[in-house]
Image 1 (cartoon, one colour):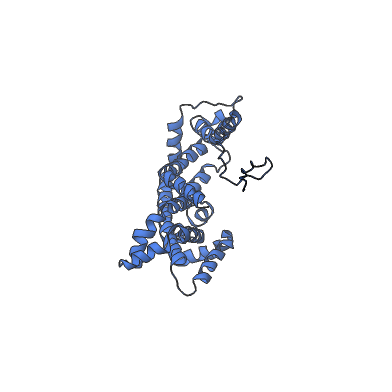
Image 2 (tube, rainbow, N blue to C red):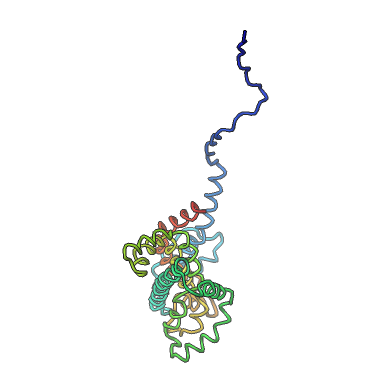
Length: 296
């Protein structure tokens, strides 16, 4: 007669079959985390607030002990003195013209070149990209003298074209957009567009450009800030009667005595456009950063 044996219970030390691990619940930030973030935020904003305080005071307020921490009532008087002391209105116009033109040009040409290097196949593509990237290793100061001689030959010395034209495209922008578009635009999407009869220009305008919007916003912000804050080359090639903002600020700080209220008033005025540009491009910038983080 056959005997029926019941299966023995599993041993306690037997290995358990692997299963999905339970995700740990996210830890909530503690008090010290929020305290550190608030301290960092206040420390970052204090120089801007202090500049606004000094800009709204008279020049002798900066030497008071204890220091003045409350805005005063001289802000509009100091703003009027800034525009009376130097050609600050012309400087603002020149900086807006230079920064806006250079930003649009760099974003457009860098996106075009990035699309070509990332998605088009042509002879010498790798060598041209390496040559473009290699130009970033040359210090900017080494090209000042030849560039100034060239501007003199063109008759652009003292004119705003001498500041705009050398910055219409950058090697960093080309490399940045090449790296972004190589992963942001699938080859299958471009092939589908070609099958529908799209030319290369239409593919760029209707497919590549919308996909490059987050990276273009980041590149546009960096380019605008760099062009707005550029000081050395405008100081060399422009005249005091036709300056940019940074050159006008340096003229406010020149002289035997420095009027800090006047200088910081000009600095506050010069900071406003960058804050506005960041507010306009902030959503696209954050979207581009998050897109890169998710892909990585």
